Image 1: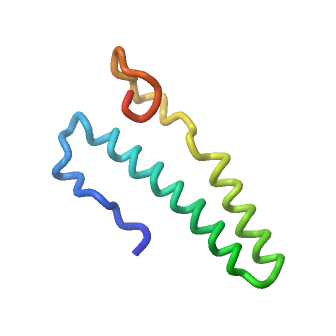
Image 2: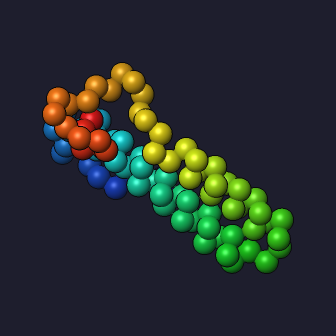
Image 3: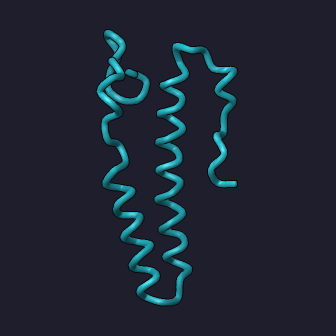
Amino acid sequence: MLSEIPIDLEKVSKEDRDREILRVGIIAELDAINLYEQLAAMAEREEVKKVLLDIAKEEKNTHGRIPDPAFKRRQGAGRGIGAW
């Protein structure tokens, strides 16, 4: 199914687990955007295409939002997921 987590979190160290969870979430967002756009391209009715493209647009708007402020950046780390 599309909602399966692609990694075994039990094999990820505790210190890296949250970063891996965020990474998987970002990958899922990108996959969702691609899926909605592909489905829109296959749809025959314009109203269906519009709905799917609107959903993809919403996903794009939420993609890349800063995670919960409870996560603290590692000292000296740059921007991006590797910094969490």
